[in-house]
Image 1 (spheres, rainbow, N blue to C red):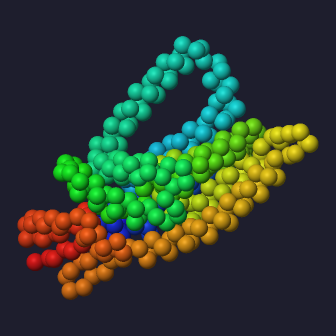
Image 2 (image 1 turned 120 degrees about the vertical axis):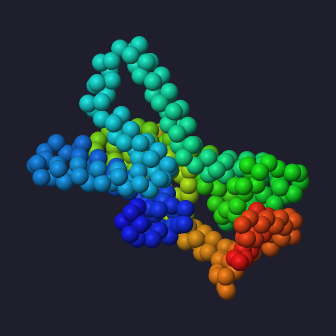
Length: 351
């Protein structure tokens, strides 16, 4: 209904956002439901006609919502999740083994060309968004280089990044392409980059080792395939937006980790230590600690940034008092006065 403007979206720039402010969250949730629906369709061998038709209709509807949301993140995430379901299928593996190597090479080359074309298409949909993410990544890497091992600490990204961004624009003149997309941000829109910035390379390395350990020696069955698809969907989406700020997505990721961990083949070390229970215990502890940290992070974000409307003036403020770091640039366009301070909209006065 939002697509046909029968209901108003919460975001002025996107028509379809559901009950969320960003279409990415709507797209990711629908992607997860779509992956579960496809998994249910391919993993069950016995279906009556009515149930089969119902599931196919649901899949078509979910795909339509994802397309209408214009969430490029969800498009990539659902494609990644369904690819895991395809390549972990026994039928797919038998089919791939029958294909000659030269044909496999041609297929891989064709897929590479298709990925490049898809990437160019996604970039053309909203190039300013891509430029904004590139700027965030560039400045964040500069800050990571200052404290690469242990990071800057939890909940410090919003403050540290926006101060660094102010200094970045103050030190020398920058191109309009960067100025145009240098708005206030409270997250890196990449959970791995955020983890690296706040907790350092050691924590990021431990996380990567844990995921490699988790996904190794997995017994392929219906449960593990669903778990790997869910983990892949959320992991890929975390490259382009912040999944860690949405507690439900984190819980869905932990659910996928649980499905994979209970289907791992046991690893026996000297003294015959079975590591499968250890993985489950570690996952539960990460879930409990992570939920507590996330709740505190969401509260800190809400306290850090606030917006209110008063007599036609829109005031965006944050606790940094960014006016100390960068001069104010006033732009007048068609009777609209916009004052930028540290590339953060501080005041808009409508005439």
